[in-house]
Image (tube, rainbow, N blue to C red; front, top):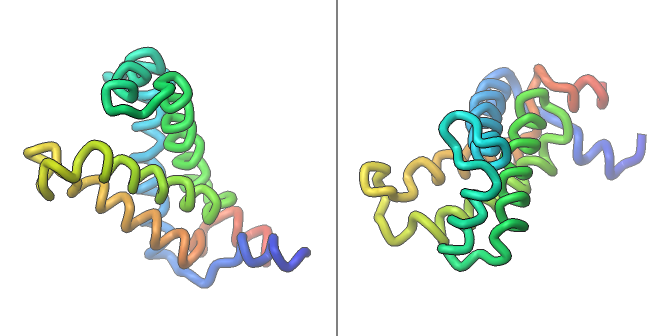
Length: 144
């Protein structure tokens, strides 16, 4: 197997990171489904695009597709443990954008729409980015 592919897929992490990866993946996939498909009380692409535009993230339609797609497909990648590092990189960037464009001015706590929740997801994404997918993952199955 090529050295680059092996570096991307390799994991030395155990079952603990597997649990973090799956839980964070479920949360991101659900948020992406809200943005893309209007599921779970979400507003779909049109509503998300309007919101993105109101934040100054233009063009709103493209930003809604990029954010929703990164959350949904990145979340699915984390859940199944396939290409987790590239997915975690995208989710890390997305979390940073959410923190600094939406939440930072509201303080830490979620009760005030602060960055507490996004920061927790950022931490989970960074952990997966650094450590890899963990023991129960397709990435590990491919590299073994």
